[in-house]
Length: 597
Image: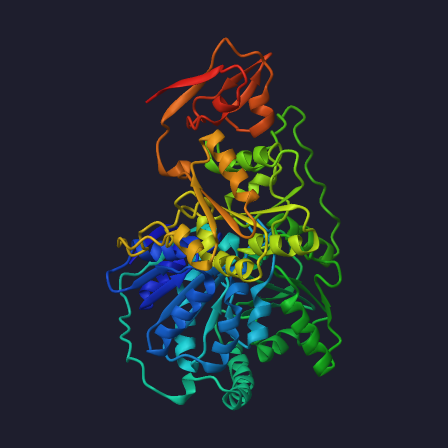
């Protein structure tokens, strides 16, 4: 046993290894990514680990392994569960043989997501148990308990850490002993084939299981009731930590209920908590899941307890909580005067505004600029997608007009074209996202003879989530070299008749490539190939010569963070410059140049 300072995601990963996980699959997405990466890093050699092409595939790979009795872990972020929801709903009916934990990291804030959706709703929707850890230490222990419960009741289990649990650090007692779990193997049985009649029977079984698990969770030691008094406080996840911290400043009597499993709700334990209470306040991220269950119990059993929380305005609906926020709410709950916020130091400097921006030297900037230049004077709509390149919406590029979800840029462009056929519709998508959900959209466009141009931004990595490999990189998460999946070959196989490749940093050539593609009727494609700057060292550092006339076109046109106005001229910050050369190609007087390193 050794006490280690580790991140929550690392704690979950090490806990899964300790629990004897056999197969791990997933798709990268903040704040979940480090779980799979940590398992790969600490793999004892007998765990299979893969980055799947998307979350649906990852869940189905995990399900197949679980059918054999293997313990499987599937990782994703909350929006990834939308992609995996089809097999998830059916798998709840089919069940599993080996313990199967589906880790879905929620992102209150949202800090790095399109939505703030609450995975606990999916748990209720799919009739699946959900575990909600409060700290990295608890997550380390709880992941093993989730595997055990899944195996005991033959059901997939959702494990829902939120951002602050995933990325918070704590000292965790990491134990050396490891459970060795050997899969029995696949046994043929009619139960693995989902038919309407079987689904009907299984639905009855699932509903009965909910009642059983509600009783199991009422006795689950991580669901805790403590204290006494006429007022009650309920908290879950990291909000429980904030609540415990804030309560140190209050002397008022209270009962405290920590909820670690929101579904099925531990009704019996909750009723014992509610007994004798006049009012209760609930702190939970994100939605009023626990709050509404308490209201349900009060109505069902005729309890006069007043439940306060999001519905009553005592807690906010949107955004993540903080200890200060919970402390202010508790002061109001206990009837104490609101504390005055300390006034900021008048001498403190004003922090600069740092909007998100593409990195200096990022090839996506060149890609956007080439398309923008090629389409100058024409009516065009630029549909975007999820990735670093979503930042192309910022000025001065202003090249992402829509962004919905993974893979939607290609299909949104098709809908726009049907309603507005006189405009040019150009869809941007990254290489990893192309494999994730871009291919069906391409097939749909070809099949329905839609006049759009698909621009694949191939930077040879999954950059936004931390540079994970994908099918186009020729490397797997197990460290093996694999056959590279050719994007141009896939496009050709889908029926795209015009496909062109180009380095976006060769500006003139890139502009002409785009013009040819857009002029081609039907579905056309441009693959911009240039690696992410994180994959190589700078080739050169550019500098501005005395020939600069101060027109600042380089700054106005591309907005590279390495460029800055200095008096009447322009300066290039050498610590940021990657020597991509885009600004040099834009400069009207040739004042930008450099030496190769």
